[in-house]
Image 1: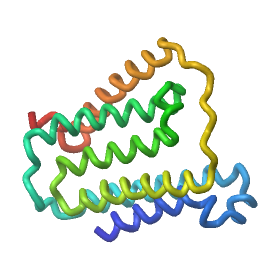
Image 2: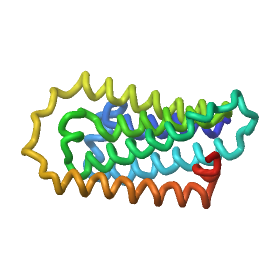
Image 3: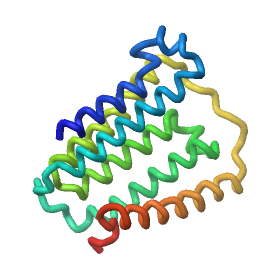
Image 4: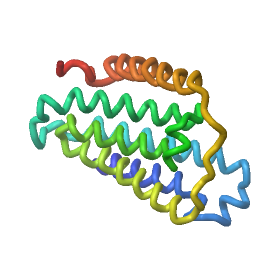
Length: 183
């Protein structure tokens, strides 16, 4: 569990580098990107190792309705993440679609994962995303809406999200628990 907590701390610190050490971040300039990427990957590696090594003793039995809700929440999270890259209407309406996607993804996983390590991992990442949104909102003005979004762009984002969701589910089943095994 210590590795899991250290990984969450490293992940948060790496993402907060511009706020935590603005002088260092400014001195590094574009060279900060690979440094941050290495720190994020190291944090991710620690989270994965820590989660895998933690006890799998359940805290509760997930409700049967939690699984379909989990799938819908994860699909919505994948869409929001894609929407920010494709610049859909959702990305224009929502201030931080990627962080909202992380929050949805984390909440979905908390519904169906009953171990303490899951509470630490998914709860920690969800809280990190909420804190990031609050910090970003306090620092930056509201963005101005962009140009109108075409229906084709919206459709590409939806189709892309469904395809990525299916790929994630397949890979998840190969490297970890099968997400559709509960059905």
